Length: 363
Image 1 (tube, rainbow, N blue to C red):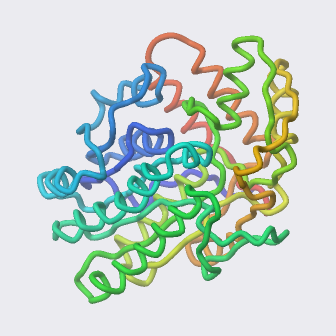
Image 2 (image 1 turned 180 degrees about the horizontal axis):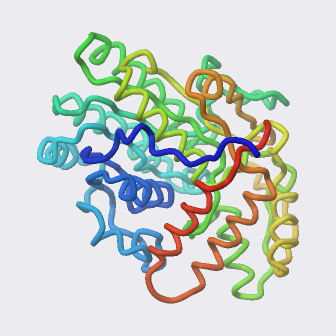
């Protein structure tokens, strides 16, 4: 049997004041749950949850962590909040996270993902207590050449659709702030995290393939796949979050040695197409059906997207723990939990414990 996933991150988060922007979102809520179990004092800042079905609401996080409703585009709200709570480390996850929505409202996407990044770093710059800051962007930040091999951290930023371009721009802003304001010893250590397509229970965003699958199944409707052959680095939500927490641990313990960009994704051979993912979900759950449809002419979305995770594996000692089959199984279980009534706090903690008890597979 291989090493267990279980990791308390050197107990570095216990008693720490941790800021999470976007804590009402899918990944932000899961990260807040994990940090809470690690003994951190979590301070969230985000727009209010959109529905009562959101993971933040279902897990009763409002009563588990400190949270303030706010818009990261506001020039004062986040700065004032961060100065008030004086966090030790800050994770920036607040974002407009959907490609299709970026076509419908590109201005809001750029304001949220670009100006929001500036607001985040201005808040960090104004708060001396912050020793480490991680900007969570996306695998779509890279200039996509439809290569079969994975993008590395030193590949150029880019983006055709507004969402991808906004994430590339967010990375450039991160690099600029790092070199301009956070390069000297004694200043905050900054890094960015670039993850693949993250799936798992608690995600009910519109126009995202896995939530769309379960919504369609609930309504006995046929799911429409607009880009069935697109290959993506699918990951169960806890995999990249373990990467973010590992990176945060390294930043707090070792400072600027670990500054820069970091990819967190599945093993290369675990990337699969949209259609293969849906077929696996149908096989696992025993329900669902789909049809394919052409992508609209003016809505570009990359066909091939893979991440090279060699840097995180070699320098952070982080690696993915799950096979694609395990990713599908944990995702299906998460949505099964979502179908229950009442609080999901215990169910989420149970799934976290299950994940941490697994053994690593060879990659």
